[in-house]
Image (tube, rainbow, N blue to C red; front, side):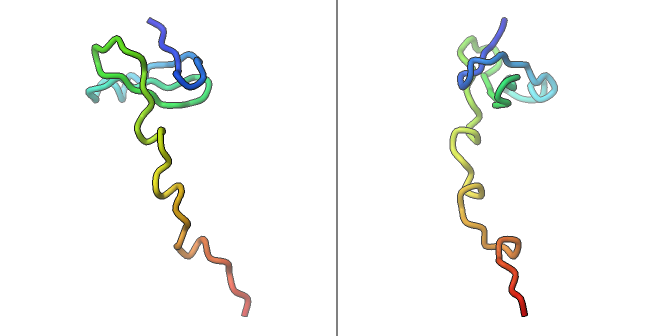
Length: 74
């Protein structure tokens, strides 16, 4: 059965190794690279991973480590 990405309607491919060790089946969109999931045995639509629906705090918070500081010239 073909599955399609809810974001771009592109075709998806089962990530079999990851799905074999999990309680859900994981798919990756061949067009936009979104990773999707669906409970094993379910016939519902594929859902995006929770980490892809909202940015992580580390992706939106300003950096405070030394790599983000402007170097000073003596």
